Amino acid sequence: MPTFDPEVPRPSSKIRSAELRDNFNALKKQIDTVPAGPAGRGVANIRDNGDYTITIEMTDGSTFGPFGLPLGPAGPPGSDSSTPGPAGADGRSIVNVRDDGLGRALVEMSDGATYGPFSVASGPQGETGSAGADGRSVTNIRDAGNGAFIMDMSDGASYGPFTPPAGPAGERGSDGAPGPEGAPGPEGRGVAAVRDSGDGRAVVDLTDGSSCGPFEIASGPAGPQGEPGPPGEVTNQQLNDAIASTSANTNAVATLDTPYDDPEKETLRQKLNELINAQRR
Picture 1 (spheres, rainbow, N blue to C red):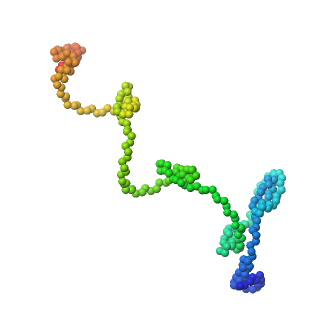
Picture 2: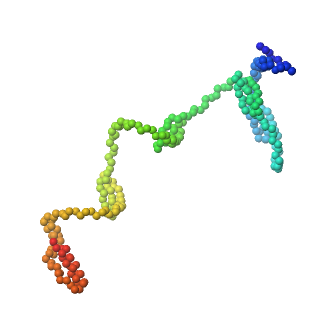
Picture 3: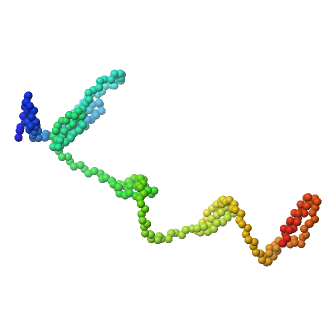
């Protein structure tokens, strides 16, 4: 196994890939044998002391500071420069930290440079954290009516109603078997009578004894004139009964048959004859 030689490559010598590869592998072997040092410490907090100074608190409990001096009174604002200063050079930053496949880190920079690989020291195993609070879940999804639904949670809360988007209509299913006959429903109520309230309006009496109304009755349009019915048959008794309730028979009263020269008298004569003839049977 080759050993690391810090003089390789030597001045003015030809570069041989095998020689460089062996020297790099030897250097890597030396680096890998170096034991990991104690865990380092970092900045845990930067605390504002309230007097324009800060104190740096470290992860091992130590502190540094305070740093800074109390600020004096603010000076008057300066005037803006009309000429901008020259643009600074582009900086570079870390764009990626990736594993080299051997558990080490490679740092890729924004200018294309790469640093590493670096061995990442593992810190001590941390203590097991306490159990978190119980989560919540959906315990029921129920119908809210009108196609919406409500979600009931395990902590007693409810959310909704939510209306899901309607999907495409499915094919018509086959008819199910007839269900059993239901129990008889309660006895209903109907209209027992419709009567006049006495002022031209209608009152509806129901079969359970209650009444509704009065209601205004709107008159509809007049219907067409019906066809004359056939003459009725009247018996002698019906005719005698009808005559008995009328005035005396006028068949014996003679009409005025002589015309008058006076127009008014003639009109009166004609009307009197019409009346006599109308009362005859």
